[in-house]
Length: 255
Image: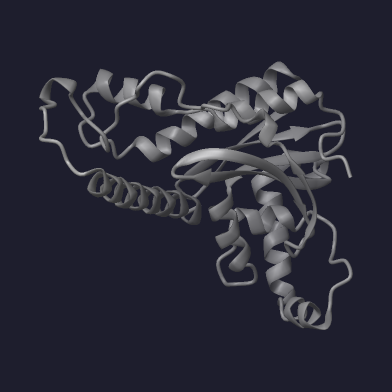
């Protein structure tokens, strides 16, 4: 199954790069220009930058850009009007959590969008038992939510495809296009990682609040054992990764 039918591969590459290229340079320019000492805007601002770049590429290639709002979260998705494919951008860990919450009281907008896709295929008895427990009113609510979110574009959407970024140590290292059925059973996947820039941070050091705020304040520190430095770096990366994952999830979960 071709999930990019009607879209040139060069456009796919441009969309992936718009999604995955670093946002640190722009975020830090904003921080310095406006004297934002705390940097609390960083995570949301990074998504704003990604969505702006995705929007620009989509418009340049005659794709429909949908800018939607759910709660405090605003997001951009891209519609190929010729095929009815709606492309939704997210990170792997966020998507995994949303999938686990399918059928629960709170309907995430991913749950609403995926209701537009096909039904289950070749389910075993355990899966059939799981899906048969989804109340009819739940199904009705998520379809209505999809109609509400998409508005006049609702009839144009045939299926929803998730563009999923995979991260390691806070860097996007891969991207996959994933097609699910309405119960988040994976139907097809395409690896688009070849379009991800090899070094998305480039060759220029970009400072942020987790590294150094002001180069003038850096002092020379006595030499530290390499094993201690490596252990310190490991814990710093782990803490920073967990912090960003939590912020990502809070923003999408509040949507």
